[in-house]
Amino acid sequence: MNVDLLPIINNQNEKVSFEGVLDFQYDDAKIKAEVNGYVINFAGSLEVYGTVCAKITAPCARCLEDTNSTIDVEIKETVGKDEVELDGTVLNIDDIVFGNVLINMPSRFLCSEDCLGLCSKCGSNLNINQCQCEPDDIIDERFLKPKYPKKK
Image (cartoon, rainbow, N blue to C red; front, side, top):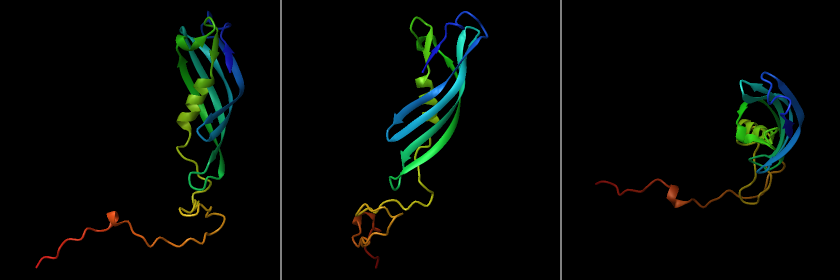
């Protein structure tokens, strides 16, 4: 989303508003961000203020079913002159929005706190049906208590 800065470049304390919807994808997460805010020329620097309501669709970390969640993010950033493009009059705020949403996203998504996940043998979703797999009788010897010779 491009913001035209021409009206505020030479006018201190003036601001230009923006709003729109941005779609992103990060790994398996699909993000739809509704953005609105403004850019202000304050003492020769450009400051971006805004709010983002991001709707995130991502797979559950345990069962891989799609989850839906929403996060609200406040943006407050000072923009460097190297971020302004096209002869210093247009600012693309996509990276600013994406960075702020990414920082505030949960590290993993769950369909519910008591999600049972997938069976490690057959891959069956244990939230839907109980699989018929037998528990492992094989024990990895590396995790057994060490056996020491008995003292006499």
